[in-house]
Amino acid sequence: MIEGTIMLPAKKEAPGRLSVALTPGIYSEISARAEQNDISLNRAVLQLLRAGIEAEHQKKQRLEEMLRQYRECADPREAERLSDELGAMIFGQ
Figure 1 (tube, rainbow, N blue to C red):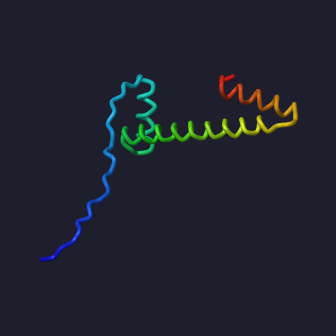
Figure 2 (figure 1 turned 120 degrees about the horizontal axis):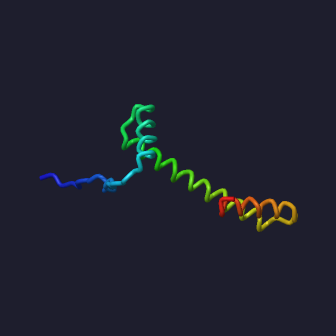
Figure 3 (figure 1 turned 120 degrees about the vertical axis):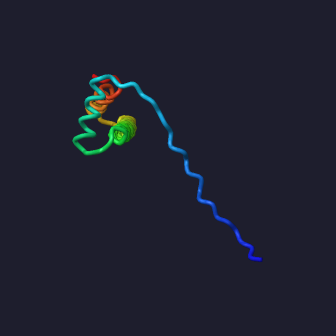
């Protein structure tokens, strides 16, 4: 009799499914992107979602860096410039 341990693969997170209603304009843009890159609509949507998430992450990092610079700033002109930039980032002006 041989004794041993059976190693099971690590449990992978199951992929999620999501149904989304798209406006005709958004659908057309995604469809054109998929066709242009020779990929499926699902892959095009996934790429756009990933790009959007990464862009939001970078925006958050930039905002945190600007806040740090603002807090540490001793020059009133630089502080005003940073304040204006932060306002534009936060309020979209």
